[in-house]
Length: 236
Image 1 (cartoon, rainbow, N blue to C red):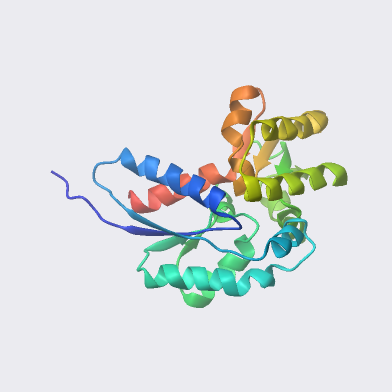
Image 2 (tube, one colour):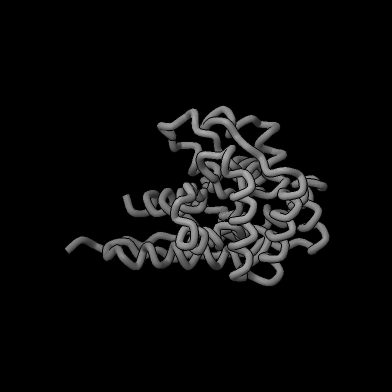
């Protein structure tokens, strides 16, 4: 009989506890299917004032406002002897990467997990469902355009709807009508987009219902890649 391997994974929560809990539950369910790996998952939620959260998601404030809170979160997980630390939040990726590098710890975010994936259809045009903050950083770094293919952004009006929806989910949780709101935005851009990339952990909570209701829509969710990468790192 193979010995059971014990590991400790740290989850650095993003803006709110709902998406972090959603991610943690998926990870727990994934490991329940394995008999020889039984990890301990430590989740610490990163919190800031709601008004700071709102401005950040709309791309109107700097991520450095989150620095101390996220640094404290990562340091707490390091003190808990986590083998590596996972951040489900896309928008805080760049800050999280720098904090992990400064502390000399191994970190993994959705964007990092997706960067190792090569899409064979490089000429597909990708629509992005994410916060304004992440879109601003992606455009500056030109990462998606460079690594995946052409990127189609929602209009300013639709992006404002997405940002407000993210804030609503953080505050109140995902609701059935949220799926229709995202589907409506997708339909408006459907002629210009081949594939949709969900790059927000709050919006990832809607991905299963979108896939069920609209199976013809090609959706790539960064959280799926994060779950797979975290699972493979422990279950090797």
